[in-house]
Amino acid sequence: MTDTAPRRKRATIFDVAAEAGVSRGTVSRVLNGEPYVSAAAREAIEAAIAKVGYVRNTAARNLATQSSGAIALIVHEPDSVFIDDPNIGAILLGANAALSASDYQLVSLLIDDERDSRRVTEYLGGGFVDGAIIVSAREGDPISQAIADLRLPAVMIGRPDNQPQLPWVGIDNRGAARQIVERLRATGRQRIGMIAAGLDRDSGRDRLAGFQDALGELFDPALVSRQPFYTYAAGVAGMAELLRADPALDGVFAASDAVAAGALETLRGAQRRVPDDIGLVGFDDSTWAVRAQPTLSTVRQPAGQLGARAAELVLEQVRTGARPTAGALLATEVVWRDSA
Image (tube, one colour):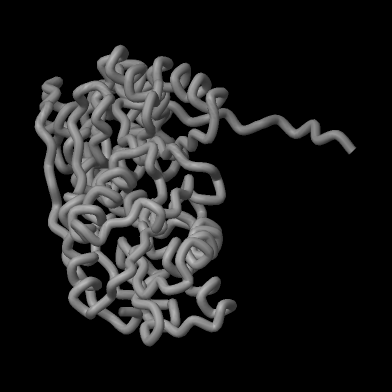
């Protein structure tokens, strides 16, 4: 049966003014948080808003102010990685908390292929967001250049070398990787391999460089398994590849905790004990690290703080119109547990 009941008309600012017995301008001043409105008038307007069911028209306000009230979080990862990677979730929550405190909305945009890049580029040019936070930017990424061309306030998490000079926040991936591999080497391991991932971005390349720094003359390129993503599946496949390359392997640096968890699965299947036969270390100090058995020695990176700091820097650009080119490094620390 067709519903023929008339729809209730949306209450307007004029309805509020009529109900409160004040001018439209007075209602507008109250809605905008402006002073010079008497307590009695303010109380009458608030009561009228509740009575007539007035809901502010955000779209109309944004049109008038030339502001969307939203910031995009652009993640360059397949859907499976977005779901699987706790760091992305922590970055998202950190950014959302900072934006919410300033009454901004976070809009998540995922990019997996060229079609996604075109779609997101068009969206960014449509004025739907006031700025952007870019996560996991890759080599040759067109989105970063599109943002630079649009002069959209933006911050990158990480700092790809070949990208436009956008502000960034990040960690010293190379130094942190060197520190944990040196600690692994100090346990007496002699044949140490790495499951490297994400080598098309700065984090993956820098972690591999730090691994090589730590090993020095012990570095063997044959003991590096190169995987596309920081995933559990990459750890399963990479660990199998390293065991085939050298069955005498006695240490492994996994490029992330998710990768390390996958490596543990392969080692269990191969009857290799951790840490007795092979010492294993990861990177991130994510939930993977504390749920693994044994728990993972790893590098703690402040993912939530990275998201929050990136959001703060974007909002600063939105408010001031200035675009800093300097970056900000946040601290990491080695967390030593049972796996090495």
